Length: 246
Image (cartoon, rainbow, N blue to C red; front, side, top):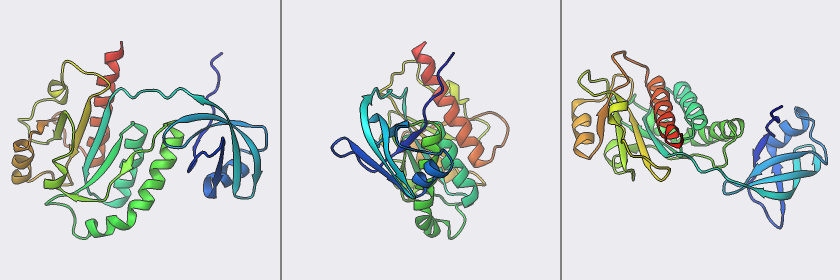
């Protein structure tokens, strides 16, 4: 019988073999999971993964004693998602699903067709998106949290460091995404996926990206919502790189 995976939580730090969890996560452990001394969970300080035993659980504080360091799996690929800002309820969903799909970072983009006022309001949403990413990371058993960046203009974002740069494009002449991925791939590859806003890229933005070394590619003839396209593209990338292990 396959053992049930232990629940995993992120802690701010581990000091002298001890860690503390406070706030909502601690309350969830105590009230929902009925945490009590002696129970064992996995914890991450966003650097390493540990097996830890609860020493005390009261109100909104759970303290752990580290038992051992666990192996940290190496991701198949490092993926950065650069996504044009869309309505916040949709962007929040995108943050959650992109986190579950293993992205290393999420960069909100201010594009020509970004709805007026979203860029300024996005700065106030960063904390909320980080919380969404934290919860999704714990649910999907990640070891490292994705970085949620403040919004940038497109021109600045195009300079992201990556050896594979993919521009999702609704242009019918764009080749399929699978035809745009490299035949040779390793876990050291860094992939950046650029996803446009509602209404798509302007011709000027498309030319700017392609002129900066980005490869225009498509997910097929259908017109997808921006958040759907991002998740579909990420899933293709992760599956493609994970297949290199077989």
